[in-house]
Image (cartoon, rainbow, N blue to C red; front, side):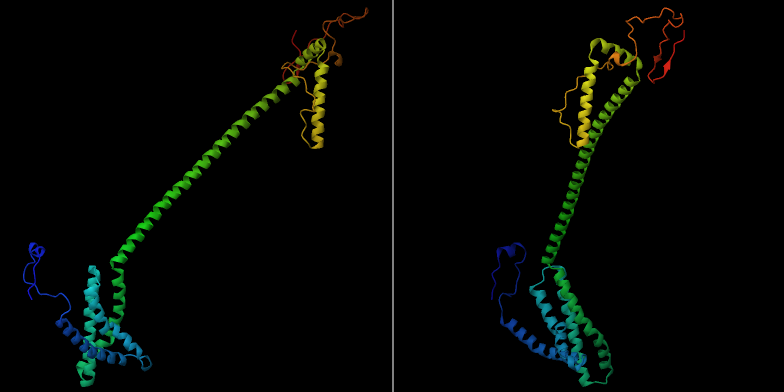
Length: 325
């Protein structure tokens, strides 16, 4: 039958004489029948050899072993023709087709010689080779099945997808770690800023307290200021009023502390505003004669007793020093 050559084949240099292999022909059917009939012979030879290598109660294992010899040879040939797509799959399929074919030849020869020449040297040599070789071929077929699937395009695509997903997860974990570190740094800095602000405020309060404490101690130790305040309070008449207001406030605070409840600012009488000058006391409450009034002198008093005593100058530490004459 004449085959029409396409324009593409002529352009690519494939316009020579070609054999028509399209469709299922009589020759294909004849070859399949031949292989099927001969497969019965080789299969029986392999089965008979395998039955001699297994216990009597495990004859079923001989049929299983055929999948590593005759049946395996047919399957690997079909895989190479219709299934494999990658070079590693092609190599695996073709290699184990040849290996299984070698095993079939070895079992057929050994089994045939075991009947025709059971005591021959050739029979003994082949039996010595086939005994370890056939189990190795069967086990190798199991390994080849795993290799074929591990090298398939689908498996490769799935592996690449898993690798990409794992790489993505690793990068996202790095991003998450950076976000956690940033949150920690933000919390740490804000907490430190709040602590510093509180420390600054407490330091200012402590400085103010120390200043008030030092000023109060200085007022208590300033005897000259106390004397002057006493003289000034007598003139103005405000010492008793301020003292009464302070006493009232102290009594209210004492009552609040005793009852355990905070003092009510509205119920506490307002204390008068104390000026920055030392507290002025009533000169009548101390035994210091006013300097503006003359001191009565007895007529018979000696002259030395008429002179006033030397003034005592009090320093800030409360110690009195007499000035030198």
